[in-house]
Image (cartoon, rainbow, N blue to C red; front, side, top):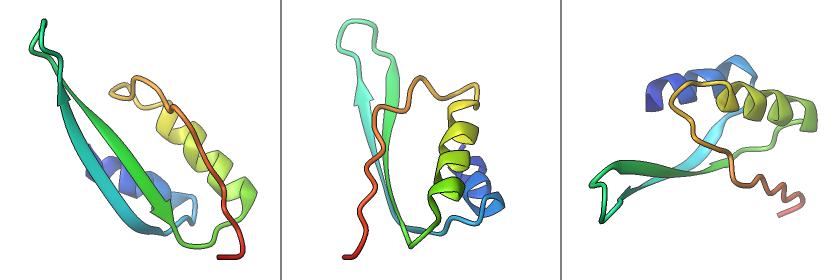
Length: 73
């Protein structure tokens, strides 16, 4: 699934600089889920917004909790 997410970023012209995946396991149900944190290189607001919408549309994504845009660093 990471490959599909990376492909969506590439399709929208947004380059990934850093990606971190943390696996969580629910103690009661024993179900695993993954949390992804992605830092990109510079990208336009429109390209980033389109990428986020595309990722939200994947059937394996439960939610996109937050998007934080930082410029000028």
